[in-house]
Length: 171
Image (cartoon, rainbow, N blue to C red; front, side, top):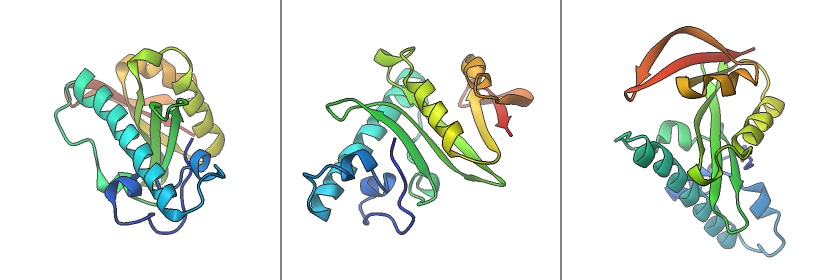
């Protein structure tokens, strides 16, 4: 899981701003300079964007730019990520301020690891870490998954990017 840096983004490079801290990388004693940490942050950000593009653009045929600077580049956005030993992003989600809540979004797992518990591990971390109201716009095909974490549907289903979604909340 990545953490957040409570100050300004790491630098002006957009990729580095996507991940404002990477606890598992920065804690590595081999990183002895800000430059090497920034390189790893860019590599982690590239991996996250690759996974998101693989899931949302390629698999789900959502033809839009998945990068949302107003969300992805905020210091108040928290990223939860599972990387393999080679640094490949296997599962990801983010939370960010949304009205009077924290919104979960861009929940994605690589096709090869679906059903192996990585998404569940990320949701466990979110539920343990985030306090207060949590909301999400979830695809109906995974509604039961979110219900396991105490989320309940609010309102009727709707289309988002031509995919059936439901608004869900956890108090």
